[in-house]
Image 1 (tube, rainbow, N blue to C red):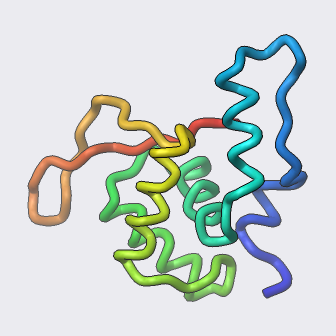
Image 2 (tube, rainbow, N blue to C red):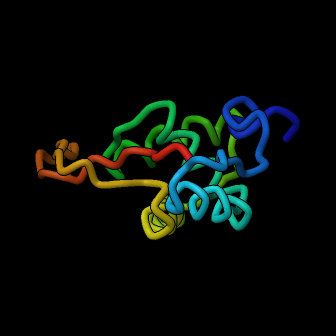
Length: 114
């Protein structure tokens, strides 16, 4: 994969925080060092296309994966990566709800910029 969504969105993957930023910003920047390529891809999609439900995230991810822009992973893997991002504070529940294709309410997830 030469061009990936990650390459387009994340021009410089080195974590950054200004010296005047709060401790939480420094913690988030440091946490980026541990992101896998798959987490980075999920974060990039949430960042560019969010807020998204998990269902919508999987749909968009699969489209980018078919085009070779992100590494392939299962729907369960995509949801797991989104959950990891939430635990790292890089994806948040906005308190808003979207709908699944079956009409059920679902959390809208939003990417947090490090």
